[in-house]
Image (cartoon, rainbow, N blue to C red):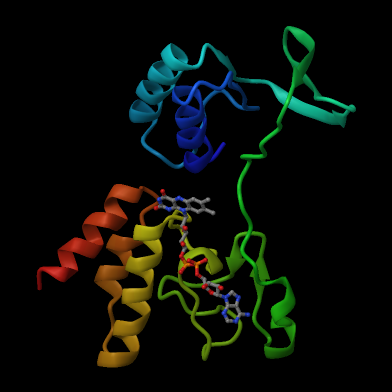
Length: 186
Ligand SMILES: Cc1cc2nc3c(=O)[nH]c(=O)nc-3n(C[C@H](O)[C@H](O)[C@H](O)COP(=O)(O)OP(=O)(O)OC[C@H]3O[C@@H](n4cnc5c(N)ncnc54)[C@H](O)[C@@H]3O)c2cc1C
């Protein structure tokens, strides 16, 4: 489950909609601080009582007036009837039509395969930042900004930003954000 999906679920609930969250693992928002996520799950449960963790969606069927969502957990099979189904299981970068193979740019599900300098591992003339890069950063705006800054700085100053990159490439968003503001202070 993505942060965007969780925040939208809470907004919809506050707007009066009946919301049910189904997540296949024991904790959502992988990559974020687990203690903070646990607190967020607790407050979400106070708002949205129907939070199903460790539950996998198996099928979604459209009927004339509603949808049936079939899911499975250790307790067994579940069927939920609903007016609307929202997919919140993540995004993939929009790079499929770029014909990256023609430029020998290796890529994977999370984007262009890059080294610690956000440089393509297969074509050193190519860099990727933000959602299009399979870096260790989360696909969020502050991370994309920080990574774009790092790539631009390498080209503008032609100096090794290795120390900064190590600092930025932590998986945690708050580290990336502090990396960005830390450099802005220089
Ligand atoms: C619904 C939604 C809500 C979000 N909410 C948050 C949030 O609250 N907080 C947060 O931190 N992050 C949020 N995000 C994630 C955030 O939007 C992205 O992580 C961030 O925009 C990534 O920046 P980027 O520059 O890498 O890519 P993008 O912002 O996607 O920019 C890529 C640009 O490249 C252009 N482009 C694509 N293909 C080509 C091409 N072939 N040629 C030329 N241009 C091209 C696109 O049109 C686009 O303008 C949200 C994402 C979504 C989808």
